[in-house]
Amino acid sequence: MKRWLKKTAADLWKGWVGFAFQTESAHRYRLFEIFFPIVLFSHYITLVQDLDFFYGPQGLVTPAKIDDMIEMSGRFSILMLNSSMLWVWTCYLIFLGSLLCIIFGKFQRVAAAIALALHVSFIHRNVSIAFGMDLISIFFLFYLIFGAGVGHVKVSNWKTELRSLGLRFAQLQLCVIYAYSGIEKLKGISWWRGEAMWLAISNPQLGRIDVTWLSHFPFLIVLGTYLPLVWEVYFPAIIWIPAIRKWVLGFGVLFHALIAVTMSLPHFGVVMVSLYVLFLTEDEAAKILEWLKSKQFELKKRLRAAVS
Amino acid sequence: MSAKTRSSSLRWTLFTAFAIFHGIVIAVAPNPETPLGGWLKPIMKPYLNAFEFGSFWNFFSPNPGQAMYVEWELLDKNGGRVGRGMMPEFESPFLFRERQNRRMTSARYIGMAKERPSSTLGPYLCRQEKQAHAIRFWASIYPWVTIEEAASGSKKVKDLENLDRREISVHICPLAQDEQGQKK
Image (cartoon, rainbow over the protein chains, first blue to last red):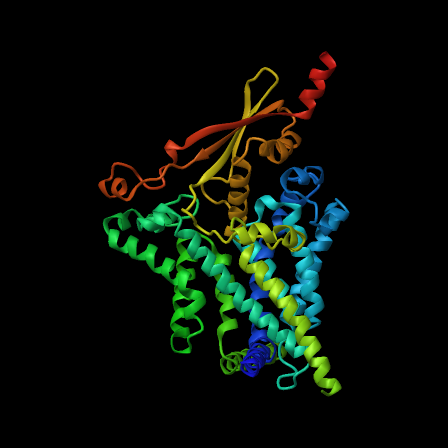
């Protein structure tokens, strides 16, 4: 019995080490480093005309009023070190620069740590404008600190082990987000009645198109309510089944594309889909990277030709 | 056991300890109402606050939220209206949709509690509109149109005529407060 327990514990430990620290992750991680920061970069670019309004010393929330909005004990904001607009711009540009570093594969870990600190600082500086996209980004910036993609593909050392752990955390995080999002919906009467989709797309703040015609097809509304609900609740389980993984991700792409188009939430949808690279196989990720490299090479060639 | 194996085991143990902690945090924090969440709260709180890891992941749940606008009226010292406005505007005037989305999120945040306009929009509008002595705020909520109402044509989808307006608060501008203080 004792020997059996010891062997089982050793097997479990070996399995855990293999799963958490020795998963080949170089290519998937590199794609994660490219796609996610690109979406975040474009999300922040849309802030450029509102920096003064949202973060300025004379803006919507003055530094003196931050404590009225959020309990700052244990929280920090680098933006509060200085209340001038020059400082806000400095932080903003450093943030964008750090995202570019991650995208182009330069000093990724350090850049991710800087980006995370600044992203959290922007949120704490004005919590009233933080929505889903901002909150999701915190976690994935955190996971980008764990490693740098490509390089050290086969060698196993603390760097590859941390990168492997970062990949697993990021995968788990996506599962947690979908699972909670689905389970929270089960508490709502509109989801139970199958009319939540109608309430969301007929909302004048979100809906872009006139959906009155849809009220004549209630079965579509019920289907559109139940399908995403079931998919979200079961995502953490079904995403690990290789045979249906592509269908699961494909449905996710469709689901988020519909949200982006009908509910005017473009970045939220794109950021979620950008994270699907975490669930590709290493071979698939390597092929996409190869394709991206060939495109980059072509672009460089064209630019050179245009310049000369 | 070789030195290399020993160092690997130690490293994996440390990584595992962190993985367990972080794994529990991200799995438990979104639902702090469970006994486990309540028990772990004091341990998790510094970590959750520092990184803002305490998200609830309640997108469109438990039910999709109603559209909310914050409307205001600028009042002069005699109580007469000198201006009005709203956030966000009914139609997005922006090229980038996210600019409107941030204003929507902010309006929802401000409209949820009566003290919030005085921490945010109130002082901002007082600085922008010098003639204003006070600002009256409303939260205007779009009433749902049911599927049946839309199908029968008795109500129009996106008809913003019938917003349910609820007064949130009146913010007195600092200049007006100073004047009142001087009079006393």
